Image (cartoon, rainbow, N blue to C red; front, side, top):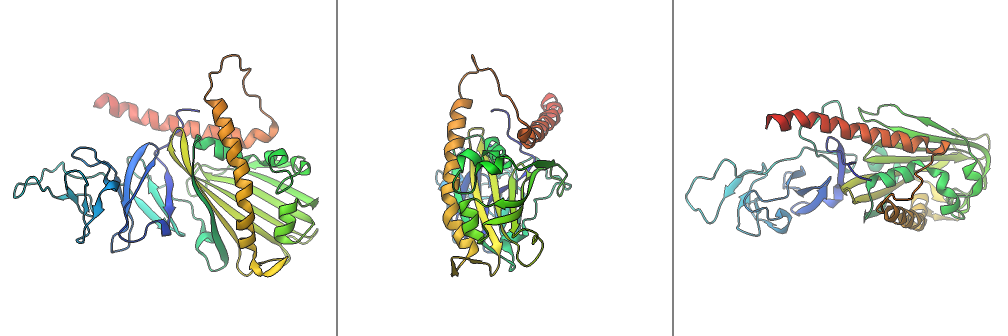
Length: 360
């Protein structure tokens, strides 16, 4: 896969606890280097991570006692607005107006730090709300935060396509009966973001081992939704109950929020947050919360997905010589819609950039 990076989008730079006060955080999103930190006033700020003097990575510098960022190479200092306020090699001389850093808009909500990587934030496109990540009504545990050496679109496709639960996850969260559950697809805007969802509803379904373990129900009515809220977030909502008891106090389930932040065309950062309703316990041991049990078991499931993604990327990197080409199944409808959304967003950016390039 290539030409998949979208800059005019809100991405997850991290959870709020990844930005303690006074710590420099360096990362790359859609191929652009960043330096980020939380000043004493509490609001996370983000700038181009390259010093405007000699492109030294600013995340290798340090924060001084006065709150300015000092570059590790020549000591240029930048304030929290990105303006250079000191050049040690030119004491007493005016600081050039070009001595500044490009800022990136930040929104912090629901315990997540969002960053806009485009040229100008689109007021009609908002960072999706994920209220259960920071709510007294839910318990949340971060299950994973890892950089994956694959194109980010492969992960989106994996998360929308639960027909792979058999055979990849057979014996834990999947079985062959899961592949036979009818699927419907929905795509509608969410806070201005283009989305696509796959929904599977089953009645009197025998739960696979992990799900019976999590919730204590061997046979259930179940609704299972995998929704790409935007190309940066996929939300998995599983609701289950004994037959006939969905939407009653007997209902149990989880929400898994997957945030997908492209580093470049060949790698991305994958964060997974697990949520269960506050007070829900693991049926096998009421001293353990349901979400703690989910978080304990799910890394094994994620490891299977990681293996598949890496193996798939190896094949993607090979020449297409002699390959007959991908064929598609009905269950791929959501995947194809996600590809279409990404393709159209990339095309819109390229089209918008052409007049500017000509003018330059």
